[in-house]
Length: 181
Image (tube, rainbow, N blue to C red; front, top):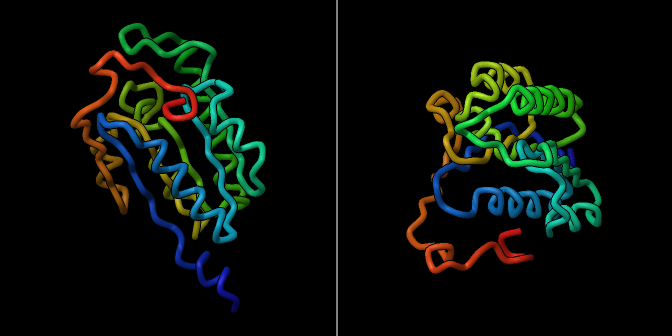
């Protein structure tokens, strides 16, 4: 057995990156770079994020063995006014997640902003857990976003909460190209 197979045999945990601090998606992207460097294949599906032409979208096109699928609508979801269109987009994204996850093509599978989708009741937590339980063995999964439901935290093997201590937004500094977008 070669070293790459040894690594793949150790995969299979579920990570959760949540909290009100910056860095959840950034941490998942950092993990993806580490995985790619080790010869693993990576997929990242993004709930509620359209293709924005930001750094990660541009870079994803240049990386072998990295698939990035932004599945959000062209508008942001308003948590105080969730529409049927918002729910349908999240439901459709979950079907794509299931299909890609079950394909066995990926060693690391990142589901970006899914915690928000569950927290805002766009998709059902029990459906997500069921999909994760039935995935092929030896696929590492990362769930990102604020509002991770308690059931997801309980189910996961690793949970990290990003806590905001200080942020440039407090000084009126908006998102900067290549850093926050």
